[in-house]
Image (cartoon, rainbow, N blue to C red; front, side, top):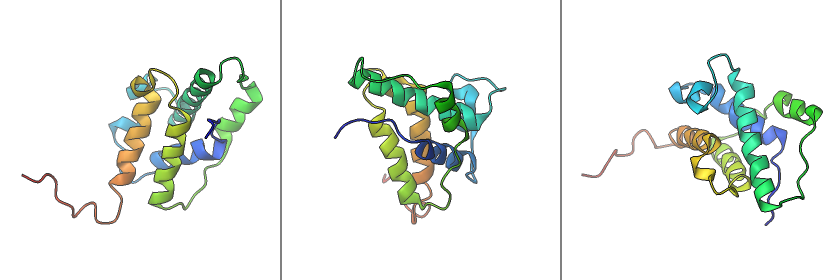
Length: 138
């Protein structure tokens, strides 16, 4: 399977789900991921995910990936999210982004990777039965 640039709806949907979740925490703030308190979270996280996806493509296909134009960046900043997806669909959406963004050697050290795992953890905690499951087995 070849790597590709995730579409603006995919990235928007991941970020907007997290930003609109009923339990956002301190990990949902740009400052935790190298941004500032002045950054608009929705745009900051969209750009964070998009930059890593682009870096991954450049690593996988050197000299074959073109840079985005300013107009294309604006599309990614402003595309509406897809609303109403279930938890499993959202989990797969995040995993799609992770798969398409993992080709850099430092992938697991990136702020984008950390953010995507924060979102995955938030999604997993909303699966049916999660709250009633045991917390440790000792």
